[in-house]
Amino acid sequence: MIDACVNDCALFWKEHESLQSCPVCNESRWVDKDTKGMKVARKVLRYFPLTPRLWRLYSSRHTAKDMIWHSTGRSEDGTMRHPVDGSSWQDFDRKYPNFAMEPRNHMAVILTTYNLPPWLCMRESTFMLTLLIPGPKSPGKDMDIYLRPLVDELKHLWHSGVCTKDATTNEFFTMKAALLWTINDFPARSSLSGWNGQGYMACPTCNEDTPSMRLKHNLNVMHIEKNVCDSLLGTLLVNEKTKDTPNTRNDLQKLNIRPTQWLKQSGSKFLSPHPKYSFKSDDRKLFCEVIKNVKLPDGFGSNISKRVTDNNSNITGLKSHDCHILMQRLIPIGVRGLLTKDTSTPMVDLCMFFKQLCSRTLSVEDMRKAKDDILTILCKLEMIYPPAFFDIMVHLLVHLPDEAIAGGPVAFRWMYPFERYMKKLKKYVRNPTRPEGCIAEGYVLEEAVTFCSMYLQDVQTKFNRPDRNEDVVVKKCKFWVFESKCRPASTTKIKYLSTIEKSKLEWFVLENCAEVREYMK
Figure 1 (spheres, helix red, strand yellow):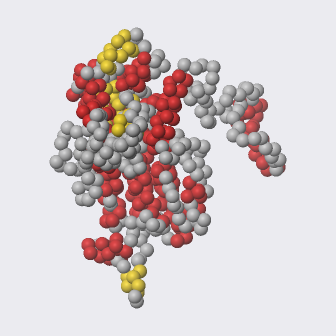
Figure 2 (cartoon, one colour):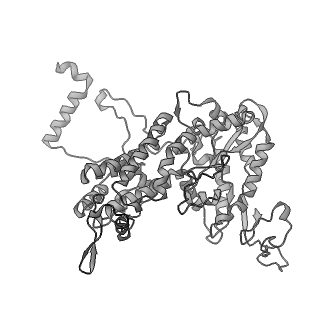
Figure 3 (cartoon, rainbow, N blue to C red):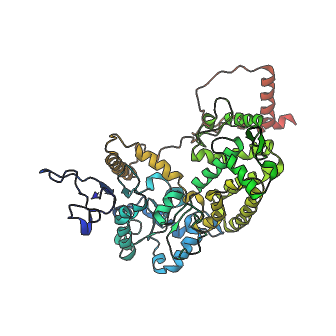
């Protein structure tokens, strides 16, 4: 644990370890500086060193073999399946060949290890919590103060490294580590990079003065997709998140475009003509009813029907993954049938752009084509939507294909697994007055138990626990058509068949049972 200034000015660490007050604001380090007993710090940073945990990954026979997957499992057919297949990793290898020659050197993104194969590197069991920054408020632009211990350790791992034993080969080597990029939402990106994410110069990628040598801060597709979905769906349903407001109509009049959409004065009131990009009242209810009756596969998503209001006229309280499903699966179906073709086609193309971008595997050529396609899609949308629709989140869509080419599949660079992990950490809190202590204690216990469970064979652990929908092995029946390929999801219920149902079942058996087919001839 490292004491911190109550105003986030400095850490009482290394050269400031013996100070009793902050060297910047002169605030006292202690809650009661005059106490005769043990002094209690006003603010404490909990730091979990990274080096011992990286060392442990190579020292265990269960994980050491997977730590060089990034060197042995690279794609050879041009398909990007892992961040190692992206241009950023390849550029790093060319720039630092001595680092790249040792496949056991480590690429870290604060909490996850990219050396591991795709099916392991984004699992909770491989995440590494390094910092617990004290609250109750975010440090904002003072984030760098709390990152100093981690930065210093990463510098040491980069320049000097640590002597480590590889359990696979039983050899000693000098393990080094490099920070490849950061994963965060757009506001947090501003805090980390120092680039203001608001105003006309909000896009850091378009900034001409950005130096070429800088740490890559990923654009988080999860939050971009949610914000675009909120704008698109809000405008379709004309709810509180709509981009079609009276001010928007006034903008059209000031720009002297689309006069049919200008506000019309009727006595003392101003009326807004119905736009072609929003549902009419009956269509809005029909769309909401469809969403309310949607049945998703188990584990595919949350129960979106609960987001539909009682009068079937609005959809509220959507989470990020709800928007993910709506954008890629449900909105395209709704707009095709309820809007005109010239209006719905660009919306469907936008949804398909997200679906292609979020694929588990990507092709460089497909992403280059997607970059051209998104420009065309946005131009078509500009002919439909008012200028207020095109905020910074819509603009960032232009850069997402380039990000995918540089970093590989989106699934390794978005916030979904980390958001779920943060929810898990919050569940460790048992004492609301000491949340950081509860999280630290629960995390250390969880990490120790997880590591030890790899060596347990006769008990169920998170490494050998069957999946929720894993099918059990069933006894093979005499006829192929009756072979069960799955296990029942609920208790057995007896159903009496009607004559028509019985006839259909008999037809199905006769048509699909190979054993009786020869007799039918």
